Length: 433
Ligand SMILES: [Zn+2]
Image 1: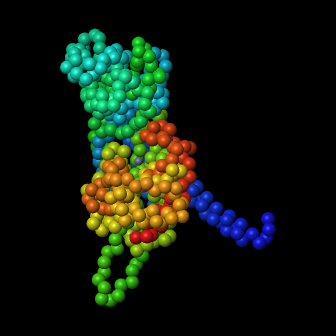
Image 2 (image 1 turned 135 degrees about the vertical axis):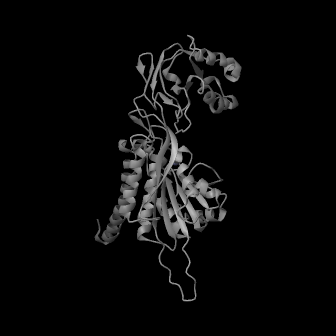
Image 3 (image 1 turned 90 degrees about the vertical axis):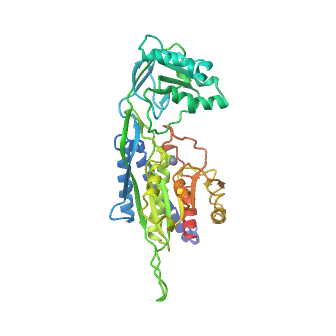
């Protein structure tokens, strides 16, 4: 190598090592949040509270200040359905794998049962009077049908939708139900449990006539405690002239939920790497940067709990805010930050057109390949803030990684390919206020 290029080379090495530090830190956070210790950051094995404590420790390391009193933690109570013990689903002699061969519905009840099932015909499914005879059979404990099987493959369009939204949940109020499906198995979390078990079986794992055995233990927790983690970087002091009144600096909010779906049985859990360990990694990355580069705004960082249960943590904060909500200049919510090969989407982009255009202008050097605008959507924690008039964006990345709410959303599947440029764009954006 020619000596004249040595300074350039050293600069490159320095730059590369800086970036390496940023990315390796994001990887460390994400990997940790996806580890078995946190068990899907849900509601068994203390996964959620351990994750909250871990994030609090990271806030402390960075040097964030508590927003209220001397604690980062805002706790609230809510109901949740959990599956904390060993779970067994067998077809003939094969023990099926949770998340791969089957999922229990997030609101499934318990069952310890050799199933005596009847496949319901289309007529029986769509005419409640017709399947009522099975219910009364069960109530009378008569031998015969105690559970029903529904094969989704013969349904499409509106009837499929009605089955999923209306008919199947209604059946699970009255009988144990097994649903055969060829669709991707996608899980969520619930808090209104059915009295009976409801299972979605991978259709390839079952033939009509095979026996089904289940041992599912569903536990309803009516008063589970969850915790939002809240810290701040105070605004730079402003020099006031003697005749100017002292005013409170406005606030910018940066938020990301840390909860995910928890586990299913004793050993299977949903790591939620993209959704949303990656968003917490981005939130901490921005916190680290702004701790060193404060602005004229108070910057509030919140890792929300209970998002997957219906945006519960953010709803609680909006109902019991630790700041004057009218003093929030803007909120940036980060969810699914692990890819970005195909750019990002900005929810509320078409609602706040000036703010969206500013973001696009800050990407003039195309560090992010595309920035798509979307309308309003109640699909993450920005929503409740938006509802009370806080201007908010929810940004998510797009790319080839399609693992979502399943056991395959793992740390190993994340590319982080646009993590650094995205962080750079968010820095520019937050500094542009
Ligand atoms: Zn999410």
